[in-house]
Amino acid sequence: MIINPVSSMKGELTVPGDKSISHRSIMLGSIAEGTSRIHGFLTGADCISTMSCFRAMGVEILQDGTEVTVHGAGLHGLKAPADILDCGNSGTTTRILSGLLAGQGFDTVLTGDESIRRRPMKRIMEPLTLMGADISSREGNGCAPLVIKGSALHGIRYSSPVASAQVKSCILFAGLYAEGETSVTEPTLSRNHTELMLQGFGADISSEGTTASLRPGRKLYAREIEIPGDISSAAYFLGAGLIVPDSSLLVKNVGINPTRAGLLEVLEAMGADLSLENRRTATGEPVADIRVRTSLLHGTEIGGALIPRLIDELPLIAVLASRAEGQTVIKDAAELKVKESDRILLVTNGLKAMGADITATEDGMIIKGPAKLHGAPIESAKDHRIAMSFAVAALAAEGDTDIKDAECVRISYPGFYETLKSLCG
Ligand code: SPQ
Image (cartoon, rainbow, N blue to C red; front, side, top):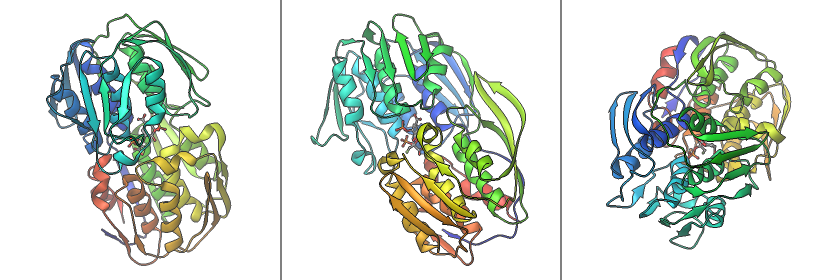
């Protein structure tokens, strides 16, 4: 995909539904009693993978674009799938589903694409094993394919070494099937969509600081869910609106859950002309319209508890930092190395190729700006966040940028390039 620079970006847009919330709505809807109606579902490949896995376990799910109806099978109503469950490219599906499957009355095997089969699964295998689960890595390398034999589980108090919503959610889903209370404490708080949605479905769950505790035994009840736009998808348009000259964009209906919205704090710290309008809530999640205008950005420091609140936005932030005045330091973000790709490596290589002054560190990046970016061939390694971040860089660069495997944006944002084009002056 060749992307050319543009002279301005103007207009309004909505972005597709939140990926994390879309996954969880299918998962909880499937094990609830009754019919859940989901509005604004993300039709990206990752969420379709989750839907296919539950259909394979006998759940009736009807989809009409972004409207989805899930006929819940109840907590104990899932059926043994006839085949291996394919999680595609989705770490969220693989990890959370493993927790849910550990306590079923049947065995399963979970796998996914090449990227998924390289991503670390020990982080979920260890706590699940402590709960009494029988889960193993078929190749013995701590990665998928995962073989899960349905077992009797018991609750644990788990102190997670990593701030990860997938690890936390995996354990909480297993906790629904365990005897006794399950609690997970994280080093710093990760996104809390699972906790909010479990509560909405009627589970007995509470949160205090960085600890979430779940007491099993209650049935879950179907509900109506309105999914807000994904802030991780909105991020690319916010970024483009800030670094493309003479721009003004309004991104409507964006989820701004504080455990997800670290990006907004960083943009403000970088001097962005950004405002939040029309604040409201949608099914327990805070939502707003976000307006940005072209801004002279300056460098900042990003680390600590902020990292899990903007982990998926860091490639885009690095792009913005390359156009900002002064130095930006991103630290405590070693998790970037175990996403769909090694995002530290790919961001550093790509931005260097475009003329930026960027150095990879063990747990992040140091970027000195502002650089005059120029077009270059960019390796996305089929990582949707890399492809979209460099599409934004390309708009503010000189000359053509060629993004390899650009179609991988379908994972989280079908129609991304079309929307981008429609806003370019
Ligand atoms: O699902 P997947 O592939 O892990 O997706 C990513 C992404 O960039 O879309 C990460 F690669 O988002 C994760 C996110 O990084 C989605 C997620 C969730 O929905 O619970 C949590 C984060 O991962 P983690 O490992 O920090 O829990």
